[in-house]
Image (cartoon, helix red, strand yellow):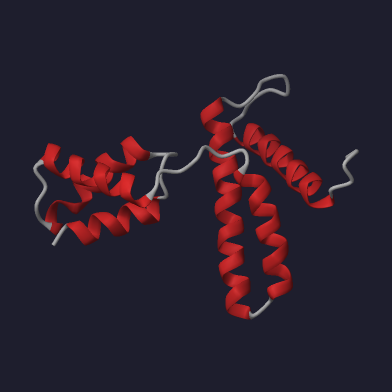
Length: 137
């Protein structure tokens, strides 16, 4: 508030409201807090919503709204752990394929299930899926 940064203040207030809503949805009492995993899920959901909004606003040609959402997304991403790079994800996919003995697209579901358990919160699910599909030929 003292910085007079309206964008950052709006993001922080929005996240606090999302935490409260999540706590109520989970049936927690007012004096109980969310676990770290639950709080991280709320932040990730907020970032995903902003990314989806940016894509929709770009399609509609609303550059003014795109700029606002991108500024908010920068502040939300400060609270997220750094995601794995594409090369790191590709190495993880190859290692999991070798570990499970997956060689065809028929086993893609089994591979994705195991990958998402290992990489949840560390890598973007869309990137993991596209790399797994690319490597399963």
